[in-house]
Amino acid sequence: MNLSLIEQNLIKQIRIRYGIVGDSKLMQDSVSRLIQAAPTDLSVLITGDTGTGKEVFAHAAHGLSKRSKRPFISVNCGAIPETLLESELFGHEKGAFTGAVDRREGFFEAAHSGTIFLDEIADMPVGTQVKLLRILENGEFSRLGSSSVRKVDVRVIAATNSNLEQDVNKGTFRRDLFFRLNAVRIKLPSLAERTEDIPQLISHFAAKACEKLSLDYNGIAEEALNLLKAQPWPGNIRELKNLINTAITLEGIGFISSEMLAPYIPHALPPHSTSNISDDRSIIPHPKNNEPQNYELELIFRSLLEVKNDVSDIKHYLRTLTIDLKDFKDELVRKSAAEENFPGDAITTISEDELKLEDMEKKLILTALRRFDGNRRLAAGELGISERTLYRKLTEYGMTK
Image 1 (tube, rainbow, N blue to C red):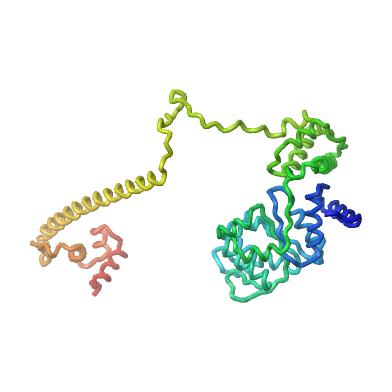
Image 2: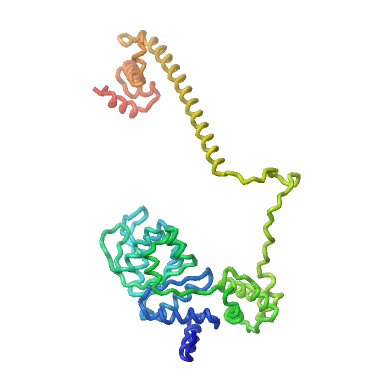
């Protein structure tokens, strides 16, 4: 894309104003797209790897829009638990959930007439995506715990390092929401795709770091520059910025050399080895069989074994309970026979039909009450239960009269 001199000057001014560094063609294309989209009210989707500067572009899109004097609210959807995200975005009424002691407005209400930046949009739960789609379509939403409909005028800028097309195909992201957010897409290149911008980025970050420390920035040695250009930079611009800031701050030097950088450049990890370790060198012997294990089948067998153990425990418990009940019956017969010393309440024989738990409990309660002339407190003590429990049992068996 051939840019006119006016467009080139405009891009330069915007880069300086918002700290967008780099003259590579990919960056010029991204900034040109930003200039086209910013004055409109269209939704913007900013994509790119982690650390490529998506939030910087979101700030620039807001600052170059007609909403620049209004609020700019930034929300990291991946940093807020799913259970709280809906409440944070749309607000809630008092008592809407446990802990909602007051009414609270959400981020969308706070951003009214301004811009809301939804970073890591791919991490938004599908249920919350439905509410976001409603706002994008007609500006309407409801607070959590409320049935009343509210309206807001908010421009939405979203960002993600995920492939939303794949997320749509997997069903984790709504197709209709993707189309609404993707009205304008700005793709930010990784640092590996724009290595020609590395010298400018180094000078930019180093000058700022030296300014904070009251140091003079005296440039970078060619060996150090080549060393930094050769790095993979998986963290992109953010990783480069952190390395430069850390090195200058800790070394206190305004000139970047390869010796200065050496302690701060992460060493490459050794290649992964899959060779077997001999048994005589291992704390835990390695299996000789190298055939792949069927872990799912093993898990099923293990679950069945656990169920079998549980069934055995239940059978053992039932056998123990049967023995205890027999002992209880024998003890009841013994105690009933001992009541012959109390006139009118002797129970000399108990048939098998009478040996029901409810009937036995009634008989024990009656015996205790008779022994203590109806004194419930003493009877409860004899039975080993509380007076309140005794009263509940009397009510349950219709014996309160």
